[in-house]
Structure formats: C-alpha cells, structure tokens
Amino acid sequence: MAKKPSQQERSQRAAAALGDQKRAERRRTIRSITLVVFALVVVVGIAFGVQSLRGGGEVTASPAGQSEYGVTIGEEDAPHQVVIYEDFLCPFCGQLEAGTGEELQQLADDGSVLVEYRPFNLLSRIGDYSERATSAFAVVLEESGPETAKEFHDLLYANQPSEEGPFPDNQALLDLAVEAGAEESAVSDGILGESMVDWVEAATTAAQDAGVQGTPTVLLDGEQISGDPEQILDQINETVG
Image (tube, rainbow, N blue to C red):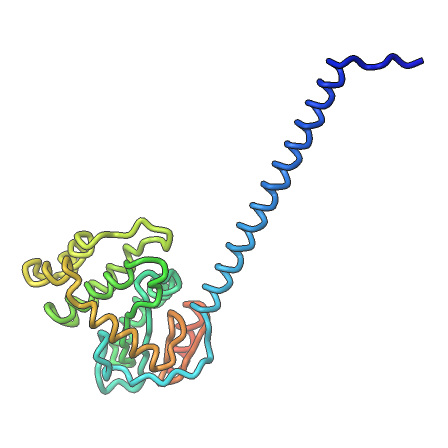
C-alpha cells in the first residue's frame, strides 16, 4: 500500500510543477519574440533590397547636364551619358560609388561619358540625415562650384554612416565640406542652418516625377540599367567600347 503524500510534499510538487510551467511559457515567449523579430528583419531587408535594386522601370529623366539638381563630370559633347539618382545614406549607393566612382571619373576625363549625380532624399523614414547631407551638398554646389561639390559628394560616401546611425551632425558635414575645398566662411551658415532644404524637396520631387522608385537608379544614354556595381560598370564599358 502506497504511502499518502504529506501536505508538505504535495506543496513542493505543486511548486515544482508551477515552476516548470512558467519556464516553458518563458521559452515559448522567447521563441515567439525571436520569430517575430526575425520575420520583421527579413521583411524589411527584402523590401529595402527591392526598393534599392529595382531595375527596368519606366524612368523619363532629363539628359545628363540638364538637371538643376545635380553635379556633372565630363564634357558636355561626350558621346554617352550616365545619370545616377542617389541618396547619401543609401548603402547600395555607397557600394555603387565605391565600385564605379574612379572608373566613371576616368571615362569622364577621357571624354567618353558625361556623368551626372543627382542626390535626393529617399530615406527620410530613417531620419533627417539624407535631407541634411543633401542640403549641405547643395550649399557647396551653389557657393563653391561643381568641382568642390563633386569632391564633397565623394567624401560623403567615403564617410557614409550606417543606416542604424549614429549620424554625423551638421558640424561634421561642414568639416567634410572644408576638407573638400570649400571656404568655411562661404558655406558655414548654409550647412549649419540647412538653408537648402527647399532645394532638397525640389530635387526629390523631380526624381519622383521622373519615375525614380529607388536608389541607386542608373541610366545609360537614357535607358535604365541595373545590377551590382561590377555589372553596371560592365554595361557602361560595353556601350562606350
């Protein structure tokens, strides 16, 4: 005949069972949270990748050298044109610049291609860095000219922050502008005061009106091309010959 458990033993068993139940519930909760976070990361990553790498859309942009919202390198009578719509925070734009910047500069210097970079504010949902950096670019373009603006453009990408931040403040943008060759007295008020926000808004509207849906958007002789930086460069070189 089995011995009837005492009240103390019953209480201990009940406490142990309750502890096991709570631990199981915590494990289920942690797994659920992990799955939700992972799903969100995947969805966001896919959405951003599609947005940033989409190709083949109908983009009707003005020819290189004919936009009010960009900087050009090369000769106006070059036989080929490249237009690049970009956002200074977009990591794919940073990859494109790293993978094609020097080669495009060489093609422009050779007289083979007229290249126009058209920055605008695509990633406003992440924060205000895209707007501030583009405003600073516009200030340098207006006050210091296209050559310094292109150098500033390159430095913005060479020092591009992560989308997760932290983001450079306006003083850091001013320091890069001075490093690019701008006179501090000429651009300080405009960069620190974000005086070209209206220019940024107009550039963004112009990009949207042209049918640009993501960054980078690259057009070669008016036709949109896509791929990774090496593939884009291959298409340009193949056309240029």
